[in-house]
Image (cartoon, rainbow, N blue to C red; front, side, top):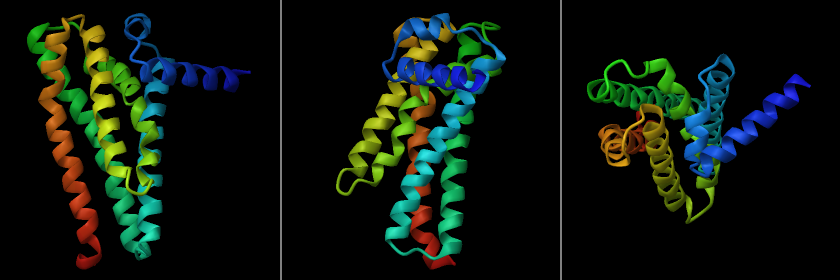
Length: 188
């Protein structure tokens, strides 16, 4: 029964986050269970990205050592992006509203906001992958804006400005990771 409750909770959280439900972010308490669900979403997003990349790399007949290294870099980039973005939001939020929330408390709503990234495996669809990746990036940005607005209890325009502080850096890092993955076969 406990496992079924966890799966139902994860499903409900994913749905609320994907639908940009502001009330969900407002009413979700900061508990061990919500921390676990947020981390699960980030892990699912990472697995989704890695699966999509793996299929593309396998189709391109990438050597096993290059494949594993590329997937490792992909996973680290997504998880690192999550912690970096949360940290930038926390620091700017501290400046706007000192002592309002802790870094750990922000990890939960921003982890929930990574829900669109769970669909990242869809980027392996030929000819649509880049477009899907951009849509998921913007969807995640909107989701994080809602999470930050509710989590920091600030106006939407401030949430947009705060989220835009880290988002371009993450997009640049994602592009950098793509370039590294393309160059790996030449380096190894």
